[in-house]
Length: 338
Image 1 (cartoon, rainbow, N blue to C red):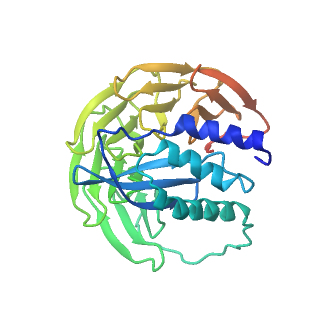
Image 2 (tube, rainbow, N blue to C red; image 1 turned 90 degrees about the vertical axis):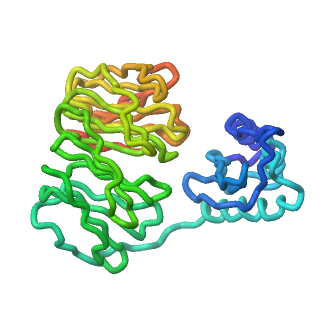
């Protein structure tokens, strides 16, 4: 914890490295603050050239003992949009985040509802950011959208000619859905109307993993054809093919800034790619069997991978080095997360 002045200084230094001050020429106008509980942060919603935009102030090192006034001073110094009148509301938000960090959860969990909407087995499910909607994919070639509280079916997304295997919302926005199928295509849908915007064609084999970048501008698809492809959300066109794996790609994940993506494959390797150029930045070698899952941490400087070899590995993204190997599972590792 940052309980001393010296340790608080470390937190401030880390924050200052992450913050991106607005340029004077941009002249954005701050409209309001939005609170993000996890990972801790404050979102600045501002108007620029008539368009409403957002920028995150990440407070990844915030702890209950961090000095709130010192942190507010650091944020104010870095963000030119924040004026003197904003300091007290900002301080209250920092305090609210600290109170959340102190809170101890005593919730218990129980079965609330059971839905039997598909006529064949499910392959996957996913929530939107707020949790008020969720989607399911199935061997019946459809994806269904449900209200979480009531269990009411909102939409059935039909059009695939084979199993709907991979599905995702464009969180945190939640207004779009993508579905990947054994028919080798990915479809982009309007989450509110159920309309299909685009069918993305190009893979030579089944699509088994997919995802949006956090900015909701790029779609990534991974396939049994040993490639991953990047697609433009607005235009519905392929922008890049990531070639390098020598076996099926079964896992992929964007970093928070959306400029890198990590893929995991049955060739025992994970690869880190530059999204803009499609260049492979690092090949993460070390697993003794297929990589089943791989993901970035929030800061984007670490990757964790899980494998059929029963181990998990922690990787340094900057150098492409394995920092730690965790052993102990008695069977295959199928999923990892931070």
